[in-house]
Image 1 (cartoon, one colour):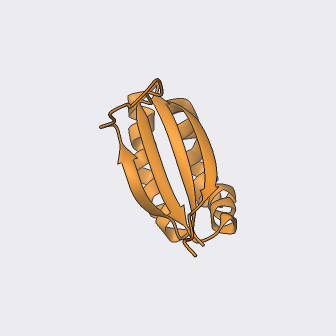
Image 2: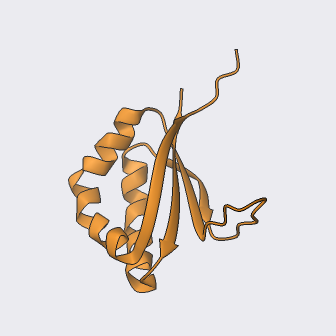
Amino acid sequence: MSVYMIIQSTVKDEEKYNQYIDQVSPIVEKYGGYYHVRGENIRSLGSWNPERVIVIEFQSEDQIQNWLKSPEYTAVAPLREGGADAQAIIVEGYQKD
């Protein structure tokens, strides 16, 4: 069953964050990730009003952990840390019986 990483981010340094975005996509894909949502065009239905939301599908949580611990990702992570405040969760996909 797929797992999804859902990220909410608020940009604090656009230049650094754009550099991160440019570099992270091929790394995500190399580790089996697939972007479903990656954007800022958000319409809130309540009090939650994130600036940016990203949803990435992986086939397992191990793939997520391998990506996050990879030398490629750890090299670009400082750009994300300097470019945005982010919160992330991992959630299992829904499997209909």
